[in-house]
Amino acid sequence: MLYQLYEAQRSLMEPFADFALVSSKMLGNPVSPLAQNPLVQRLSASYDLMYRLGKDYVKPEFGIPSVNIQGSEVAVREVIEVNKPFCDLLHFKTFCDNAATLDNLASLPAVLIVAPLSGHYATLLRDTVKTMLQGHKVYITDWKNARLVPLTEGEFHLDDYVNYIQEFIRHVQATHGHCHVMSVCQPTVPVLAAVSLMASRGEHLPLSMTMMGGPIDATKSPTAVNNLAMNKSFSWFENNVIYRVPTNFPGAGRRVYPGFLQHTGFVAMNPDRHLKSHYDYFKDLIKGDNSSADSHRQFYDEYNAVLDMDADYYLETIATVFQDFKLVRGTWDVISETGDVERVRPQDISNCALLTVEGELDDISGSGQTKAALKLCSGISTSNKSHYEVKGAGHYGIFSGRRWRDMVYPQVQAFILAHHTSAKASKPKRRVSASAR
Image (cartoon, rainbow, N blue to C red; front, side, top):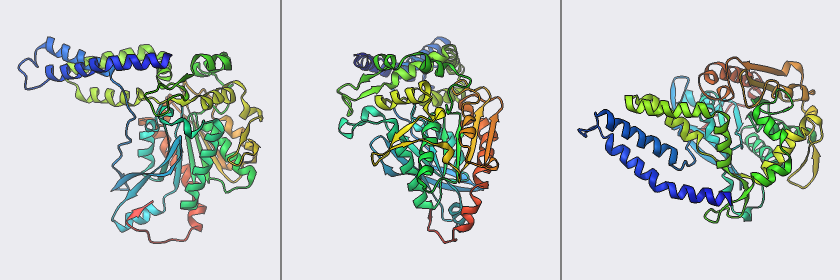
């Protein structure tokens, strides 16, 4: 019933948000003789803020039309290479007509970025993708909003997530002959499970794994996010945060953890910071500081755009990662695509390098939670394992913003390149077309 009430409230607010937008533009029109009046400026800013607080936020676009690679501007086009019911494998294909640049593009390492399925869209990693494109062929998991997935597509479980990742790894390997995997936050756990299962079967593994700010071992330095999942029972989550999608969406009747509840939780973690941010935005509008106002809009266009998660996946993640700690206790069994029950054994991984990255001030994945992967992967030699703590960085700072670009990316790039050399040397050189993967 809560979901239906939320949708009714959102529908009720829509005309008021539209009115606020029109009013803000009319009062703030620079050609209007009233535009310089202080009272009118405040009214315009108030209506603008009212619109921002009341509007419906849709899935953002990656919006990366081109990228600069070693001084050459290279066109970028998004291509869906694998279409699954709950996720697309998105490839950022690069295009150039310069022969030297084409040769360089063809030799770049192929990296699969596994984006979080924890409330926000994969576009949250826009800065990650744009930066990685400077030196890599980039793929990303583009998770779908569960309320848009018809019931006929079946349920989505944590096991399905793990199986998706394995399929995507095999696809990138089949295309390029190799694959590097990078997981950010929540997917560090299923990515480690996926590679572990591939290792136990004797499959060809990714050349490297980069794990950033994830709850590999949530018992270490628990955060407020961890404590909520640990201190509430499984039945509490099932009875209090799971709802069915209303009839006005393609996924009508599907059991989900609604995005609006997740968003409420995000805001509740730091209400004072968000209140101050909106007030600063109001003052920037009055001052005419368009640069700061645009930065606010860009951040909240992303932050406020949330998706629903299938209930089975969400509940199983809570139980597996934050309550039973199955990965670190060695008790996690996954049902494969063929229906076989397989035990997750990170110690079976050997021919795959591992880099863990943590933010010094991360308040979502605490200190040591990601680094725990190094101990779990005991089969990887010490020389192929590395850890990097990002000084002064919070959770988002390790994959977005100045610290990501200036501190983290150089470490990640050097690590991937170091473990890509052998594959690059063994692959015969060939001339590529004007489209370089």
